[in-house]
Image (tube, rainbow, N blue to C red):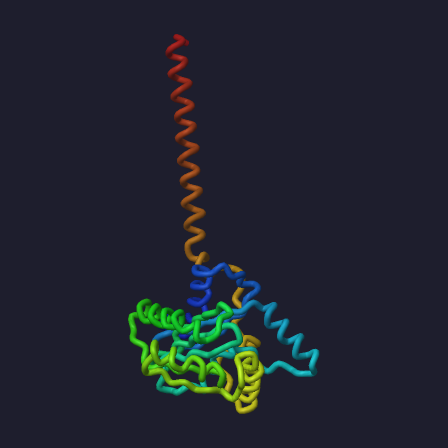
Amino acid sequence: LPTARKQSLTEEIIRIQLERKTQLDLDETAIGHISGANKIFAAAVLKKMIEQIKVFLQAGGVGAVAVTLSSLVIQSRADKKTDCCIAEYPDSAELIFTPGGQISGLRDVSNGNPMTALMPRIRQQVDRFCLSHNTAIGPCTFLLSRASAAESRDEIKSLFPDARIQALATPGAADLPAFYAAMLAQGAVEGKLPHINFLTAMQPPRKSLGLGRWMPRAITAAAVAALIVLLFAAFFTLFAASGLAAWLGI
């Protein structure tokens, strides 16, 4: 999203855009955002998902400090010069676009195939991002398990010649969630969590701020139109009655 001229308008812009572009129930949604130099990166999550995470942690005697996007924590391990970070998950890959060092988008590629099979789709997503944002993407960084890094290196280099490949200290993709969870916890201990924390996120009201400005005008216009229709109907009825009376010679 584009930045607002006044910081106080940022939350209003996010609410309006969410209403226009999604079917989210704002009563049931929490929103986090990061304001950069010329863009706002916004993310939304259902409140019930946050509650499920809190209940799960409480069952193990763990208090939640933050609920955030794991991909943003993972991206911090990537080379700072990269414009796109591709993080591997057990059955998918997530692309985090950061041209100019500012988060501009997330893309998910998932179909249950190994990393080698996802490469063409990842290349396609990067090209689409460049086209839609009218920008060029520099070298991409791949964060992969050791097994995937070894198996897909040739495929990556054929589609991303300048790619940087970082093999994580995990034997396979199935072990990545636990590894990412440890990274997230370590970031919390060190005070290096991302700005987005859904525990303290925006709680936008259900009432649409975008509708508030033009709704009274719309109601007035509808009332005027209804009045015109009624007057026209009354005039037509009177005219028809007088015409019938003249025809009958009354």
